Image (cartoon, rainbow, N blue to C red; front, side):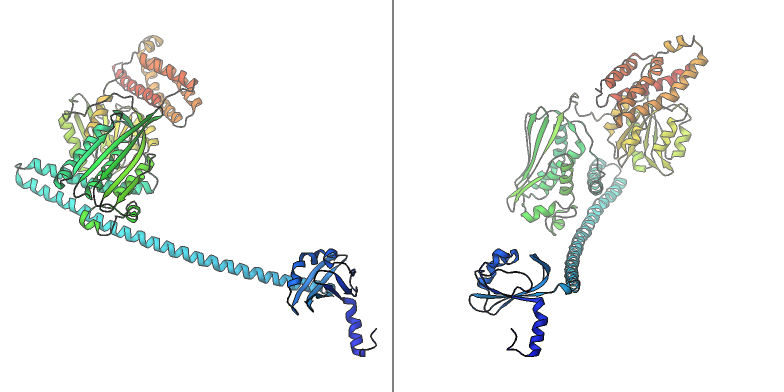
Length: 628
């Protein structure tokens, strides 16, 4: 077989032959020749039918360029013969493919190691590429954050500069008006006081905007709900804009749906703030034409949807301006503040307040034509009777003894003015220490107090008062504060109210008049049970005064936690004490409330009403006990 070749070549062939095989097949797959040294290949039969691997690359061969090699360095072979093979396909002419097979099974471990190293290298390269892309994205994100921080910082710097200007102007005006009041000796007092009131209102509005924004951003803003007359509220707002609109020659128009309920339930202060901000903004940027407010109603069984629309014929805005004005600290363009003033907070706050109330602010605007701002909110119709505006003359409350606790000079001036007009019997303290001393001297009908004083917190002081026997253990309390007082803390102090500064005189008067009526008690049952033993009666009354307030606190806590079982237990536990007080209404209310708890039909406010009635009865007990 090897006669025509040299001895060296013969030796080489003998070494190579056992580990090599050559197969020649047609491009259509038909086997032409094979030496079958490694595994059996049948001639005159398609190679594609014999081996799945070749079948998978069948379409490659007809188009393989002449002389080009298709190489597979290591293939795990399990078709007929198992092993690791290197394979090479060469197109020797237009129709023939030479398939060269080499057995690499002995090198399997080494090849596997090389392959693993290649795989690891590829994985490392891919990981490094991912890491590189991640770092690039991190860099882009940091750049974006830096740009955003710089943008916000620029807004804030501009905002604080403008707020400083906005606050400095009214402060200077207030100072100047005070000097004029000192020097004019009453000749133009009313005129100057009117201007002073308007200026202080403007300053207060600016400060409220700043405080409201910080609360909204911190997620600490809370809405309230009470009955109010929408038309009266709108009348007050529009009255405030009449002069400004008249001076500019702008028509201030209103269109109210006749189906709007007279009294609705909601947050009057915040709705008023939204409308005030939107109307003020519309009037600010309208030099001629009109500003109109329209309200329509869509009523259903679920409530009343009120649609508010403020339209103006002012300068209008581009789409970019509309997006920008809703950002805190921003105005439609950088030069607006010079001409129009303002902090740039009003619209952003209005938008967020509308969102908190369940609506969305929509703005449509066209430069040179005008702007329309609209939103829709849902309200419930109030069952309370319609009330007219409170008369400016304060009621005579000369029979009331009230202890006022206030350290702020302006607050003291306001409270003393109310005291003088209503002829209240008033005592004033300015510290917690002074309050603690004064409260022991006589019995008061009310305590009206600021929350935070220089030497302590009055909520803590009142809690201490409630826990200590004395003439004012159950005296009603009205807290005053410029901040929101936590509802939980108020719930822990039965017989307490809260008014936000600056207080409205009418709000304070409403509480004083509503709470002044005492609840009559009848101790006949107690007298009969003790056979008229006054010492024993006093002891039982003292026990009631000690334990019943604690149970009332437990009752309100159970209500806040919606703990029906605890409500039932407390109402059952206080039954003897309530019976001894001998007030038929109170006895009936406890039984009715107990039945409703059993049936899980308690209504909002019913437990608070019961606690208030019980507290009034306890106040009467204190006085009755002194007569025994």
